[in-house]
Length: 133
Image (cartoon, rainbow, N blue to C red; front, side, top):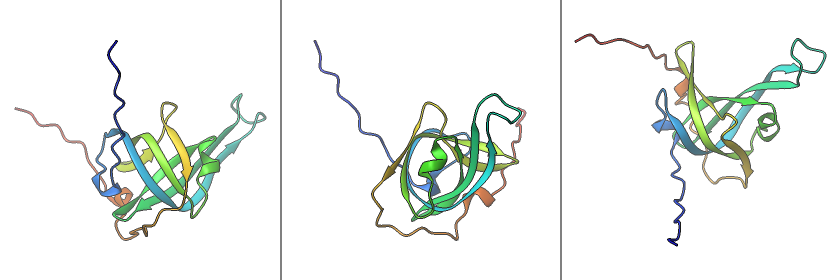
């Protein structure tokens, strides 16, 4: 039987993010975290739901990350996390980073880089245009 060779994940930087990208691996620092929705069993839905908007970044820029449920616990201000299999969601024309059920958010040891906060990719507004031939 042939041995299966595992491929190492390719990590990218915040400045390389583009609309519609998926399968992304990033190491980022959490700049800020703000709880948006917290619903318990007494809410309108039948399950617990937590949602937070976090500003995450690396040495090339920052972007808004939408943390859901258990991901909220890992997104503490000042911590360093690894986002595996992340994707870019578009919300009102701007990019937001997210990790769905097929990805992972892992806390890791503090990174040596400092976050470049003057390059916020979530402030860039994108517009979908159709090109007719």
